[in-house]
Image 1 (cartoon, rainbow, N blue to C red):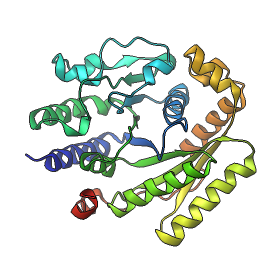
Image 2 (cartoon, one colour):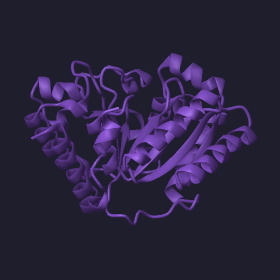
Image 3 (cartoon, helix red, strand yellow):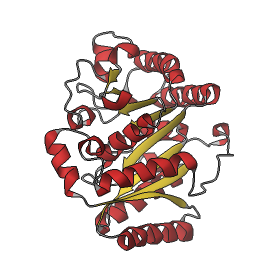
Image 4 (cartoon, one colour):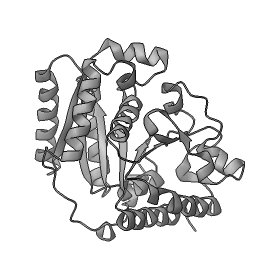
Length: 290
């Protein structure tokens, strides 16, 4: 079984799980580092969990993951340990604050999407039993776009892109969406503009990005929300406490609460998915070989 076949098998299994349970799989990406992607993933997951939903947060940034560090937790087992120590996936799921479940990434392999055939088959089997127990599964993705990662992103229901008002961050966010669109990742894209100085600045970023996407990609990005630049976030990171728990009344925490409400209620009127994943074409080889 090739890596492409393995990734396709995982994609199909995730699709089956989502259809049978109704669980929603969400991947969080950023075009560049330093935009607060993992901090968003963690606090967004916590907000959903605090609203009564069953949430699993998976740190997919193998070798560079920091979800457990942001919570100030020492994680005994990671995703890598599942293979290295022959553990079940249930044994590596940890409990964080606010009834949040999470899986730490760990170190020791280059990428979860470049495993051997038997390890990928085992991962599929383990996830098939685990994900049926959650309402939301949020994948905090690492950098880079491998063939396996693209196949994986084709399986998720929605992709959240985190950016900031910095020009390089906006450019990288657009480049990421363009690359995924070209490679047939035909899903709903949601935008979070982090570290905004004013509401107008954040809206300007969204309007510019959405206008370019519609003009050149014929695709719309939906605004999930804006998060103001807030010193409470930095203080929370130093204290290793999620900022929505560290200071629930801070402007960033209030913004996250509003984003969670907005997501659940779908007040931004994103369209329901109507394109079956079985219609998604295979990855175009000439883009992967660049």
